[in-house]
Length: 220
Length: 349
Ligand SMILES: Nc1ncnc2c1ncn2[C@@H]1O[C@H](COP(=O)(O)OP(=O)(O)OP(=O)(O)O)[C@@H](O)[C@H]1O
Ligand SMILES: [Mg+2]
Image (cartoon, rainbow over all chains, first blue to last red; front, side, top):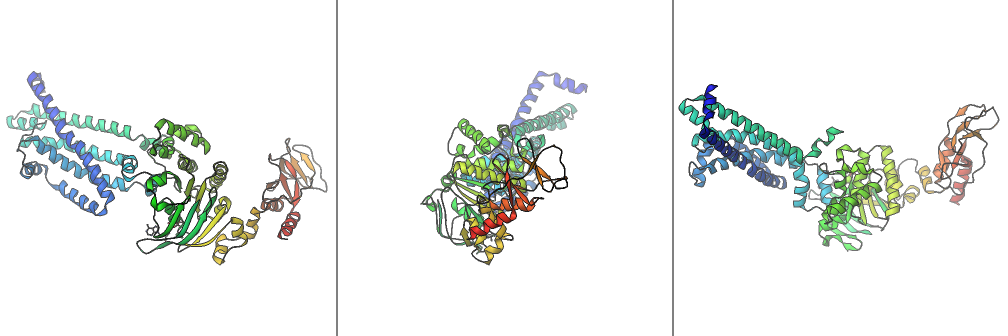
């Protein structure tokens, strides 16, 4: 433990840790936000057009089986980025998270009871407005559950990116292993865990704000 | 006014849901579509607001062919109520009711104000407006469904089995409420049900439909009961239709007679007559038999209400005397079954 105290006593190290933490947040949350938008768009497509549904769900299952490290390495070859470009991690995680979210979003949209959508149509909603005012809000609880899984998985996967040198808290692990020095590794684990917990807590708060109705039944 | 002109709907799988429907729903009336499951009631209804387009034929609302109107615009002018109410679970009751006004561009404030008025109109306390639909009973949800359909004050209201998901007692209350509202609002209402009793109760005219999408008979309810067009309608209208048709005959020709009364709680002795117990406001409370025992009363009927009520009052009364009351529930007199039947006979002429 003395090791950790000594490691943290250096102001330069602390500044570097903060940088890594912020990098980590950026690398894991940007893909999360982008994939929520993508998953909603794709989920809507699945929901509107049956054949798209089967194809996309199949594809998303396949994507999910690709090992992350392989994906980080393939992306530069596919889109021509530099090997160390953080964009690789962002794109790879966006692909993963989108693949993770499409299916539940499509299912949640399909699970909106037909009589509710029929009532909306009968009242004069146009399709797009109906989607954003009725179907999507009703899918939020499911979407939120998916996003929570996605955030944890992204936060841990960003660390893998450190193996190809893209920054974030994973750098602490690679450095620690190389120098056979335990302190940065422990700090890395703790910070990653804390980050995952804090983000999860924020997501739960956001979900509860967006869906007061989902708990209305329990209060009575 | 809603007009179906030779309207046919054939679905892609070849099912003919509606077959050459020709029918006029008069403005300001409640018209009921009734028939067995799958006879095309919902399909007919949905062709009015273009949730379904006919394969052939024309539907006109107030003289205008609906096929030329942009569906969302058309629908905002036509209220729609469905069986499970179809309330939005994620919106408060007030915001549910405010839906159509908001869609048509009202400010949120004005729409909510209107919604609050409507909750009152359908007999719901204002506090319910803040709840979510899951926090309401089925009957309350249906009322909200009706309020929501009325929010933008549409001249036409389509109701698809609006009350069939609630228990019979609540259903009766909702039916009475609808009739009361209609007396006030004077909408053109198409009401779908598979319950013939409900059809007869709420309909000014009833369209009986037959499987395959055919119109079997279109007539006022009394006529369905007394002159069914064919065996299908006769069977569908069901048992006791002779008795039930008495609902449409008023009892004004039945003279009420006086009856000995006893104040509630007063001491009684045996006597040769049945005596009616009344409270301080002269409201009937039951009977005293000749042997001085107390017997609960039968049904009461209001003077001038249907003769079916008068006959039932006489038949259900332990004394054989049906008790008539006035609008405030005070004793007006008594009638015998024979008297009622004589009036029925004489009406037949
Ligand atoms: N989208 C559809 N595609 C194919 N057939 C349909 C479709 N909608 C309804 N039908 C068929 O059309 C017929 C009439 O259906 P409709 O829903 O109008 O009946 P209904 O009288 O409202 O019955 P219920 O009392 O059960 O509600 C039925 O045979 C039904 O199976
Ligand atoms: Mg139906």
